[in-house]
Image (cartoon, rainbow over all chains, first blue to last red; front, side, top):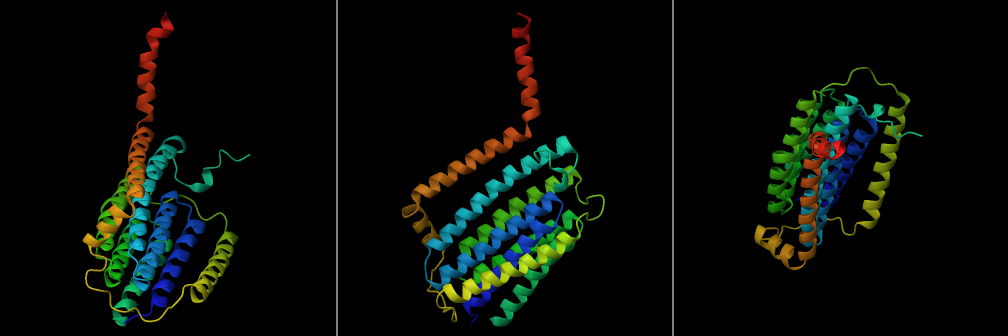
Length: 100
Length: 179
């Protein structure tokens, strides 16, 4: 059997890699994918805790997180298409029109 | 079992790193699919078959397909030009390391008993059990999530068709302006 800490450490590693993707990449779509990976890492931690404490509520929370993430992707990609229509690029360095 | 875990963890972390490194957004999306699939197998090992299968259907089935469609539609596989801020990379690495250490410390100190995971009871995490909890204890959140999905669908439609709608509105206004 595998200790619970291994799963939690794997989830930490995936979360940090997702955060690095948000910080490092310039392509807004890849930043979005990194966000999804962070969601996924936190879901893995939730599932591990569900197993550790024998609590099904954590699995239900993961279900809610997944639905909200799907909704967020739908809205976010629609916004991305709209931004691309006006700016002709998905480079996040060019999305600085609101800068004061 | 521990060998299976290490192989899956290696594949998941390798896919995540390749997703960050590769320059082509389509390859990033495909690496992300593999990452989601390995994590779904980990869910299966952890006694959550319902969540594992919904992970495959929701993420690999709809989210990544949406990503691939948008990447190909916009033709945004590669961005022109190099990285303008090189120092940003080192700061991000250092901050990521700090975050990892912080989260690791929090887990080892606060997460409770981190011993071996016992085998789950038979039927733990089965769709019937999850559905029972979902529709008895969490009825109101289910309704709210349904509403959020409805709002998201309407919002996506409005955002992606805004030009046409405004055009139609102008057509509608024209006779009024003449009077």
